[in-house]
Image (cartoon, rainbow over all chains, first blue to last red; front, side, top):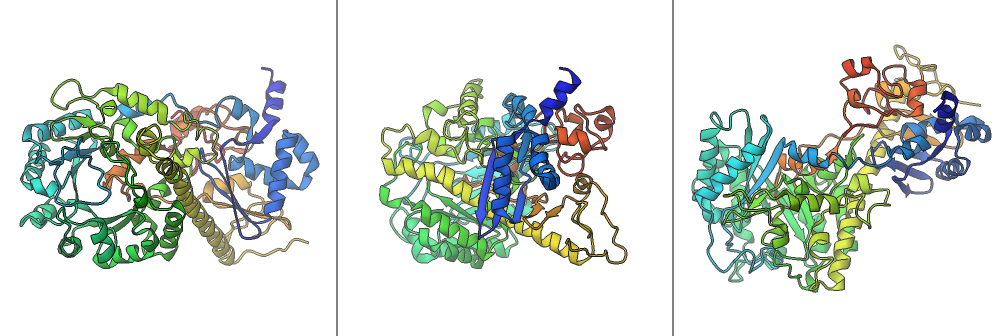
Length: 501
Length: 123
């Protein structure tokens, strides 16, 4: 291409195909190209900017735009700096889309793995929304993991990590404290080998438990090894006992809370999580307060997954209304009961809206970074997929693991540019398509009713967008405040030849 | 008539500093006229180590789970496709293809200090 042609080619501009447009109040506008998240906040002049963007789309060339809007050359530059307006060359060369070719390379470059060990598949609680299916988890039998399976799982994950990689051993179940002796053996095994065959690698221990069980030496062991905890506390006593009773129907709240307090009093970190169902959907701010009062070090709200590992669908009357969940979530966020960094899902999506970030998948499961090993050594990519044959990745004890064909299929089908429902959406490179469990287990599930399908779609999409929207407006507010402060302090912030700071 | 405000003592006037250069240095910019007020939101938050996913994990889960799916552009050393606006104004590193000085010297993320319009990466 001649230089003159090249210049002409670069003169042609268009609007990004990944544009998020948010409006607030009478005159505010927030524009983000989701592929690298450099938001531009229009504090005033929404209609002017929207009109300008329409004109950019119609005129299509920098020269023409500058002719028609001679006073807005800086605005055009600013829109291009934020990738709201891009060159046609960028679009034609695919720079306005994510590169899909490197996903498998990223998968093989493992800096961190979260290994889920189902120490036992039994549990003492009978939660109304239990994800452990009777058939796949064989919850009627007292199945426990063997040392061989546990140690081999550690070895194989350590082997696949980069030399300075980090393994998070997630002690999971069922209720993992029902097999506490194996948990301690796993910890000892890791510690004994950190200076030997695992040298250079790091390990962290985490226990996800209902905390109705409290082994005598739990605190001592946990403190010694900096173990972190996650416990489901669905709300105050009436809510929690309604959702998470013992198998015999008796209440569990009092014991769980007492044990959480023992752990936090000992200085241990216990994040608390509430599964949102129709039974607690209208009490989210109160639940956030309850988590705080109980001494939690983090707070999580997770809309219930409408399907268990047997792919059976939960009763309709348990599914929350998405509108209520979104309303509750916004109230919790705005209440500032919890800092963003300690409030899930905001803390996770906050990293997605960082400048330059892009997210092409909803989670790390397709990368094989969250292997779940059941009591027999069978491996699945996510805890929600345990026991489902089409996601079986092989057995940890033999060479059938890892069957990367499973991951390849997931990776291809879950990439936001491959999903029909996402590929044209401007939000896709920030949201990543949301949690894919619904897509994998509900959408084509013959047992799924319309309500469950609609709920899954809405939680994947509306819920994720709401979280991102709240975060983006917050960032805009922070930027505006920072600019205002610096102007007041006499620090230059505005660089435009027409403005004196 | 535009409102003018003199800088306080010690504050360096940036009247003639190219806006993009200022953005590169400060990550902040304001552009206003009678018709609009536009503010760059280039701060972002760093919370990459403070999460838990709904599967019930914490800390490094975010690295291994969402961390693997949320990528940030490589440093400018890998920047292979600067935009025209970058080429026109960025005097620091980038040309249409990055220069050797970019490759050898730039260790910053494209968005935090190199060329603000340079967003393409090889990842």
